[in-house]
Amino acid sequence: MRYGFAMPRAKKKRSLAKGLLVPGFYISTIEEFSAKSGAYEDNGGVYSSKVGLPEYDKIDHYVSVKPFKVSAPERLVLGASYVGLVSDVHKNFAQVTIFLKDQLERPSPFSALLHVSRGGVRRARTATELVKPGDVVVVKLITDWVPLQVSMEGSELGVVRASCSKCGGPLTWDHDGVLKCHACGHREIRKVSVDYGRKLHSIFSG
Ligand SMILES: [Zn+2]
Image 1 (cartoon, rainbow, N blue to C red):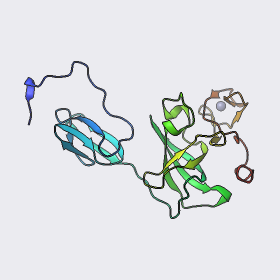
Image 2: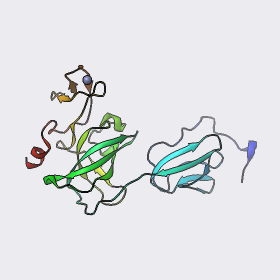
Image 3: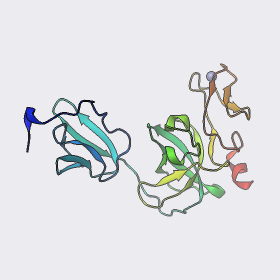
Image 4: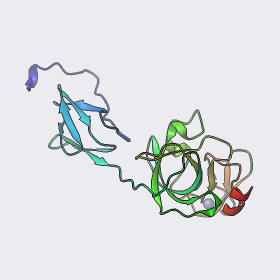
């Protein structure tokens, strides 16, 4: 039921839900948006029915949730260390494509989520403070259901290889928590593993 102009409006405009949504997550009122694929309406509200990212059609006032694509590998080992490439960084999570398990085992590559709260830096508010696209990270698998989630909590976990976001040159870690580009002098922040810069096989063989 629509109340039209008689409906009292909130004085302060609420910001739209961003970042990763999970089923049941409240998105908006039905006055603001109607539910399209990946969303549903219930009792005056619009909610997500999928794990995914919201897409707002502000002209026709529809919201849909684009499912987060994940493929589950054949065999998952909870708590095991995996090596992955950061493929995408959003506000509250990063997407990591896992291509290597410890002991150099090579699973079929699969996607996992790194939530900012599991990034290993308590003060971090956004995933961009932890990783950038193209970084190689060592992570630990913490869920074996989709969406698969990984953690960088622990000194051995984190970024092990990164390139300068200005010039693409290799970044070296000077053990002061900052990565430096020796080509252009740019300094960058990551959640760095103590194994930063070591060869991948030596990370796992100790
Ligand atoms: Zn540089």
